[in-house]
Length: 139
Image (cartoon, rainbow, N blue to C red; front, side, top):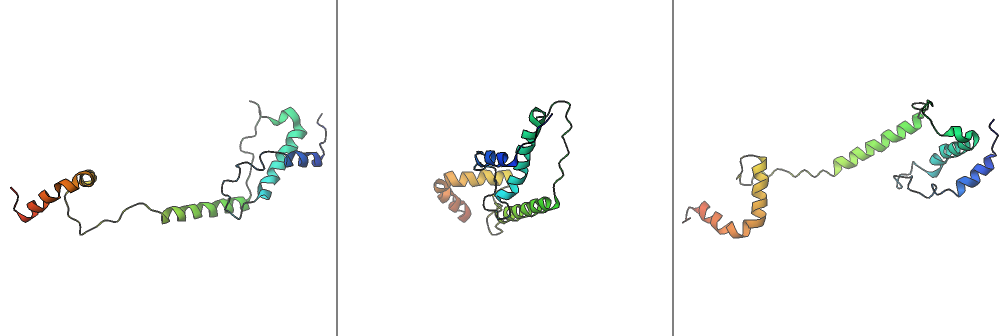
């Protein structure tokens, strides 16, 4: 038989728990998520664990999978957080703009990357040769 546990004892365990100061809060700058959002389910979990004893831990015969139903507020908060992440990701695009005025010295994208690398490493040595080829005075 399971005996009743005083909620005051649970609160004492909760105050001394290392999870309160741990890395459970993934977005510390988010104003919508606070310690209260975490403590409600956490207190219930500790209380239920003390209440049920060894039966708290799942076994091969327990059917706990899929029993949690999130509230609509939690779903809305998650959706707004994901939308903020998408907006932030779109703002910091690393795609470089295409320059129409640049000389075309490549036949495909892979060759363009190779030419950029070659120009970066050997450009100062081949600048004079390129100028002579463009003028038509190359030897």
